Length: 463
Image: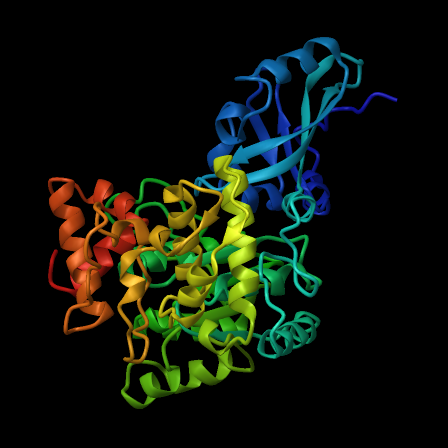
């Protein structure tokens, strides 16, 4: 039986589409968006109202069949197609999908449009590439007693719907644990939306979180849904929650209490059903005492807590991670590197890793790139590793090791008197000098995003 294209006046079309746990789009004969369900709004980052009338390929940007080619073929032949590929959403995130295209017909059996179904297969792809650990659903590796406790607690927290606060030093994998928590929960088939509370100025962050109405401020030329609305029925992950301003903390507290909020400039409340997971590398208790964080919000977020131990406290996990990242980068770069020499392992196991797993990963990537033999030796490691650091780790995001190591094989570059913080400041200045002050190029050289570089320049009074 041929599927019939719903009449435009059909009152339940929105409810029907929203009841399907996959992204759904209806296209007309010119392959323009007619309707989208809530799940596709979250997946793509576009609301139906702003996507309506736009070419489907412009909203569902993919690597499948060239611009409109596969859509046109299905519309012409009437033969449904199911194919795997990737789409790039509004946030430039690549999402692997299983795409199904079917021609729709009117009551007379004439072609009337197209039904597009997108199933997010990120989890299946990750499983196929063996990214899953034994206890959780993302690339979180570790066999130490400390991490086994984390995995055990994670499975318990996933079965609840209460707010979770994830704590731990920078680079320990809090983001991965948050996503694992979502994928192991009953909300797994619903959206997982991540927001970095320290990446945007307060005014922009409020609009990003809660949306705005047209005309709310200069430049607001159309309505914006906001991440809370896109995360409806799913999970919203607020990383670096300690950077949230006090006014936004008040608004977030209201969402936690009432599950509703006003968009910026709006006078109509939006009702949502969202689980909040927050993360921070800072001590929120200390921030509460210093007046930088609301005590009532802290207790509402801290209903359930998951602490990620630093790498230096994870017995035996360094070697597990070294082997994993060596395989990953060797395959990626087409290199045949069998392992590390005994001296290199001694150096790597003796390092303090202030940047934790992220720093270890960067070190291995650097070593695989510069290694000329079949095993990685001490000469292939970043030179800063040979300067022993006894000071406690400073909670900063480490730069890519290649941006730290000198170009020549001369004396190791030693840490300045100010420790890692001062070295990071020097790295930023060196990168800006090498790129002629171009911040985008400097950020790329350091392995950071532009907002991260901007934030650190402001921190060190370099902006």
